[in-house]
Amino acid sequence: MNTCYLLLGGNLGDKEQNLKQAIDLLEQKLGSTSKKSSIFITAAWGNEHQPEFYNQAISIKTILSATELLKTVLETEEQLGRKRTNDKWQERIIDIDILFYNNEVLDLPELKIPHPFIQERKFVLVPMNEIAGEMVHPIFGKTITTLLSECKDKLEVKIKS
View 1: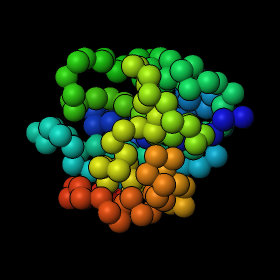
View 2 (view 1 turned 180 degrees about the vertical axis):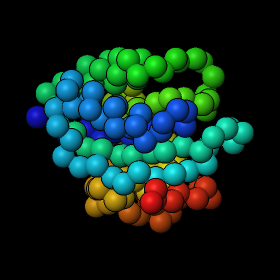
View 3 (view 1 turned 45 degrees about the vertical axis):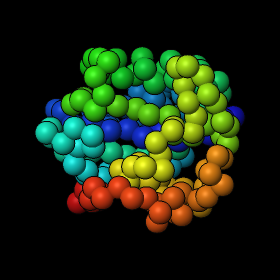
């Protein structure tokens, strides 16, 4: 069984419901989640002129390979109404990023694991810290907690009440 960590986010529609639907679909396709972070609210990153994002990190166990996982994640996004474009940092109903897959390091044209920007984004590190703070990043050799303490990102990440 493979353990993967995913970050779910979105800033369109019923954001909380979209996260819940994404988790439900992922559980149907992959297996049950073993950990779920709280939902966090963050201003948009990269393109600030759009609604705030809701983000949530989950840990899920699956028998799928990393590339099969990517295919399933992309299908799930599409099923929930995500329309992918080449434009980065745009509004979206749902976004599902693969952060970690076991302790593997993959550098494929379509898939990079660990996600290459984890260490730069508090909206990723804060939810990950809640569910896996002691996890060691396989490239940097630092825990998520340490990466969060070193992160230069100034965006406020607040827990949804």
